[in-house]
Image (cartoon, rainbow, N blue to C red):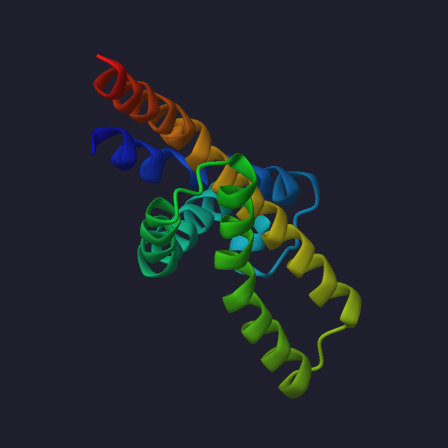
Length: 145
């Protein structure tokens, strides 16, 4: 349980750092969080924590039940967790607000990369594959003793 909490707390940090670095390199004056790397870092951490609670926790429980313990499953899960709300938001903004397509595509790519990083970081801290190997060894030792 402690490893899960630690994974939940640390997983958003690489994605938030990516966003903060992009804002540090290319600030957008007059657009609030897009002009200060520290505010972007904090906002992205909060964004990923909220999505982790709303969508990530149920997905983790589903992956655990299906015994999906590979990095690929967790990284794609992080991608989906971020891109589903982003697709809704970007779709709405493209339909109702004059937003250039390149800007929407850049946001989609940036947030998608952040989702992949978050899912991969969660897996790296949690390491469910090691738990599965330990469970298999315990089953084998009980079976052949």
